[in-house]
Length: 270
Image (cartoon, rainbow, N blue to C red; front, side, top):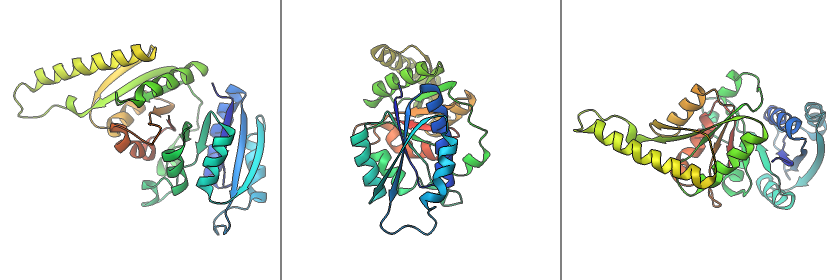
């Protein structure tokens, strides 16, 4: 399932956290990890020099097969170009930092990789949630959120293979605002029962088409709130969401960045 991991690094604390995730994945999959560092023509004053940060990263990944690649140029463009050459099974990207404003941002490089990359992208716990998060225990429970749109089938298949590779439980979640009770609407209970049945049939058909057998849940509410509530209640270790080849699509297109920002667990965007 995972043979090649691409880990872009700037040697910050966020890179060290991403390296810890890579270590868990590499230990289980015995895959190669490429540490990609892009030298910007004008280095930001807060950026850690490579000679200072590389030993710490290699220390975290001491049990993995690691290669280091250094390039010069625009970070996002270099990452995308190298990924096209290397063909990784997964790109691990750090999210942004802390603070009232920064917790609403992903960082321009990570956002561009999420939008433009044709490869699955792993983003770690974002902002303040990272500080409160417990130590990553590995992959025991995979939660896949689907919007029943075109990317869902591919995301389901990928999630099923990923869960199987890690011998993990898989749960599928679909959130629908149509299932939320509306006070004062005549026959609301009857209408919601009809909608629930229709969505249940759509979800069952999607699972059958994808050839996936998993626990599936229909929940009332909008993503990201309803999805994150389910992820937390299920004690999931990673959330998987779907993308089209041209970026986020469907209901999750408007919610995808919010899911990544607010998720208390890492997110893999397929």
